[in-house]
Image (cartoon, rainbow, N blue to C red; front, top):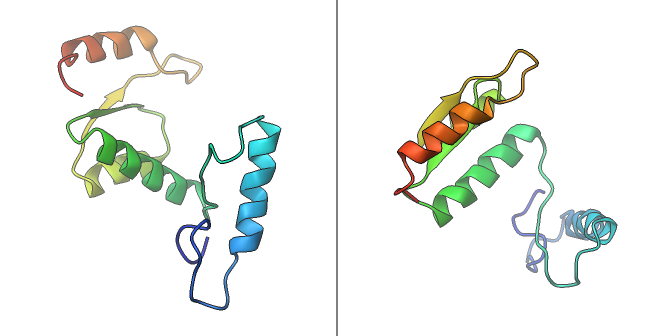
Length: 114
């Protein structure tokens, strides 16, 4: 994505909107989503996708806590710092999977927070 929301008309003549919308439509059809029920944009990297997704989460839940695996991509911790979010790193099991028992206990401690 080079010019913001691909579903909003741009006054800039050089853009990738047509291609971006085609990719988004392809995946929406693949996942059998209803027309006009989805939105998205193409990022240049996983880091950008994580930053945007976490920003949206913070906007929807400003007092929420970001729970993440200690093995998560570095950009998740970076986003928590950028957006001044509470972030809890959850240990992982020997195979790298998040420890769901620890996650459940951490969530229970903060159940009153959104």
